[in-house]
Length: 450
Image (tube, rainbow, N blue to C red):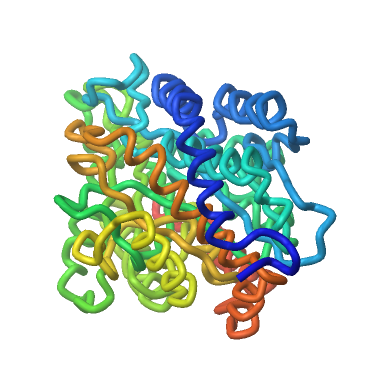
C-alpha cells in the first residue's frame, strides 16, 4: 500500500532501518557519553545540553529546553494536522555506590536510561535522515524527560518551595505544565534482564505514594539524663515495627510494598536524638489499594510518635500511578518485532512489576507503549547491572518504535485515529491533577510536652 501517491509502507520501513544502521556509530557515541556522565533528576543539565545540541546540530531541529526545570523537546511535522506521537526518553541516573561504573558521588546509569535517550535520538535519525517523516500524516515530538527516579526528596522539596517545580516526578510535572496537552500517543522503552528472551511486551506495575517523614523529640544527655529527653529514634523504630505489623493485612492481589529508610538518625551519639528522618514509598497495584495501604502506614507512623511522646510531620507526596496496558498499541509493536527477526519465542507477552514507572501517569491519560528490552544482566539499580548486548539495545528498540510510528501515522494516520477513537482515558488531565493534589499534603501530630 502507498501513502496517498507517496511511498509504500514497506519501503518506508526499510529506509528507516537503513538510516538507523548507517548512523549506528553516532548513536553509540551519544549513548556511551551519557552513560559515562550520569546525573540525578532535576540536575540533568549536561545531559539536556547533549540532547539539545544533537537535535540542533545533527538533525537541524528547533529545540525547546528547560521544559520541566531540565529536559528538552524537538518537533517534526508540526505543520501537519494529524495526531501527535511523542517519543520519550528519560535523562536521569540513579544512586548505586557499589556499581563499578558509578561516579565518586555514587551516581550511575544502572537504570539503563542512557539507552532510552540514545534510542529516542535513533528514532529521530531514522525518520529524518531517511526523509520518511515527510510521508507521514501526523506530528512527532521527541521529549527528553527529567526525574523519573523518585529520589533526593529534600532537594526536590527545595525546588518546589522555590516554585521551580510542583511535582517530584518529571512526567508528572510535564502533565501539569501542559507539555502533554497536544500529545495524543506516547511511546518509549525500558531495559530489563529477561534472561535469554529479547523483549517483554505489555508490563503492568505498581503505583506508589511517597512520604518524607520527620520525628521530633527532645534532646538530653544520653548518658547523664536520658530520661529528660524524648527519643525520636525510638519513635521511628516503633513506627517501622508498626508498619511491619500491618503487612499481613495487605491482600496478595494488591501487591503492596512498603519500604522505609532512615535517612537521619540523630546528630551525635551522646545526645538523645531529637530529629530523625524517614523516606518511604507505599506501593500497590491499584489506586484504591495504594490509598488504603498508605492510610495504614500513616496510622503506624503516628502511633510510633504517640508511644514515646514525640511529634511527627508527614509530608505526603503524590508518587506514580500504576501503568496501564494498551493492547492495540502492543499488537502493532508485536508485528514490528517479528518483522525485525525477533521470533515469538523470544518475546514475553505480559509482565508483572511491583516497581513503578512515571509513564503510568501518562498511561491514564492517553494510549502509551512501554516494552522492556533485554540485553542486560542483573537487577536494575544494583551493582550487578551489566550491559551484555550494547548494539542490540542501542538499535533494535529504536527500530521497533520507529516502525510502530510509521504504522500509526501512515495513510492519513488511520491506525492512530482508530486507537484514539477506541480509547477511553482512565482520567482526564483535570481529574489527574485533582487526584495529585489530594495526595499532596502535610500531616502533623503533636505529642511532645511543651
